[in-house]
Length: 129
Image (cartoon, rainbow, N blue to C red; front, side, top):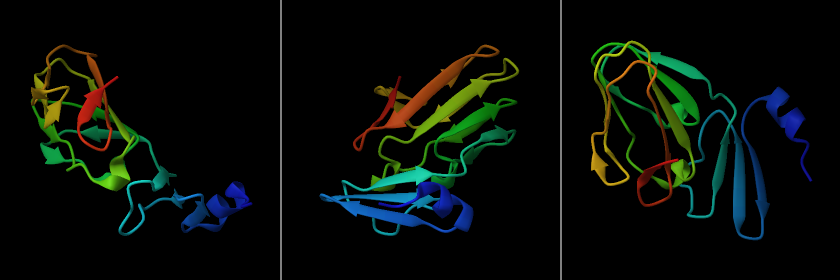
């Protein structure tokens, strides 16, 4: 048994091992994760993007506010991103693009103000929910 609160207060990552599943809790994903590993990001938040770029694994489980005619590329799918989410929000009505394939659609656009797209990685592909 591990006191999760004290692990957050103490900083760093806490690893919980049990029955073939490893849970890593902290601000950075584990090195060399296995297919059954789970990473709990302790620093999700709201990120405002005004220029084209590629999202990092450290931005997982965040809301991505998009401003301007920009593209935000999804990170390459890897084990530490399984069941991690991104929520994209068009704040200004410009055409904005999610770079990558979601539900089989290549580079889905957000075209109207306040339009939202929620995506997660299932270990094979990015899907919306």
